[in-house]
Image (cartoon, rainbow, N blue to C red):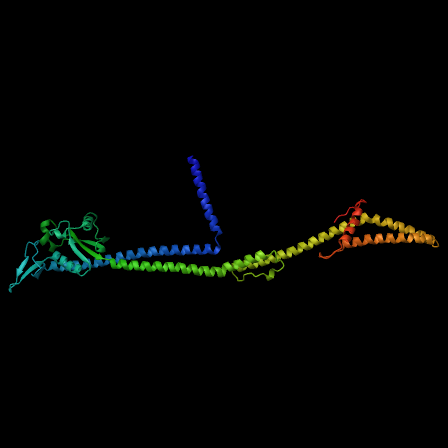
Amino acid sequence: MACGVGMGRALTQKKGRGCSVVELGKMRLRTKFILFVALVVAVSYGITFYRTSTFQHQLLLTQAVRQARMLHKQVLLTRKWVADHNGLFVLMQPGVGPNPFLKVDTEIVDTSGRHFVKRNPAMVTRELSEYSAREGNFRYRVTTLKPINPANAPDDFERRSLLRFEREGIHEVAEIQKTDQGTVLRYIAPLYVEKSCLECHAQQGYKEGDIRGGLSITLPIDWALASIHANNRLLLVICVLTVLVVAALLFFFFDLLVARRLGMLARAMDRFPEEGTGCQRMCLPGGEDEIGMLARKFQELCSRLHDSRAALDQARQRIFQSEKLAAMGRLAAGVAHEINNPLGGMLNCVKAMREHPEDTDMIRRYLPLLDKGLQRIGSIVRQLLRFGRQQPLSFRMVDVDELVRECFSFLELAGKNVDLVL
């Protein structure tokens, strides 16, 4: 039962493939050519579209990473400048207070009584990042697996990246993420402990050259993605329009250069049996291309067929005439005695009339016999002449009664052991 079902499915699949081939075979050559070219163009544009879209995304990632690297270097230079100057003191004012995580030299008072609070590189980095975030630009911050300030604790991306820095020894990690604020590029690079950093972080066990954490940079890239999507839509429209225009041009030129000319050649082939003697008058496509060459070869074939048909007709006519002459010879041999019989009687009559010219009764009796014999001989000779004469076939009015009588006269010979071959 399972084998029968399997064979049934196989037959159904073969029948489906056969129907597809038959349906494809019923399509016009123009339609198949246009569909094939349109498919090739569409596939080519599809590959181009995919490659272009992929390249744009890759280019976006490359440019964003390059921009993040530049920002990373700029922030590092700023941090180094702050660290080389042992921090910065800024005027205390509302919203600007001392750093609770610094243990030494966190606040000073000038001679005018104004209070200044110290900002270390981490504080400067965070406050500059807040300024940038308020302007809607990029954000960056310092993060570490051992934060002194809980605000510097890493998120999931930063934690994974910091662990990879320690385990794999890589120098940067970049990743595109979708957030509530939109699509962003996350970039992080390690921060190494320098001599100026040990003042605050020596108590955590760091030594110079260790990876203390990372500088995390977040770049919004929604504007770039929107530009890429707009470019992709434009490219897609161009692809569709190009396929349609190419299909229309192919339809026009294929119809003009191929389909019409093949149609002319096909119609000439259909008319050839009826117009076999008019090969030169056939309306055939010209040109020096393959179709024009095919038309010329067909015209040459028509001429050769016409010449061959004419030669065949002549040979058939000669054979027919030869058969008629052979039949006449056999007929003449067969009817010789028909002529000899009245001729012998007539000779006897003439001999008797010469011997007895004074016998008028005999002459009166023999003259009708001579006339009848001569008429008989003349009738046979005329029939043989008409039968052997080569005349073109033509249609004319005839006396059926006379024709039947002539046929009977020939058939009478058959009763006398004379073979009649036509």
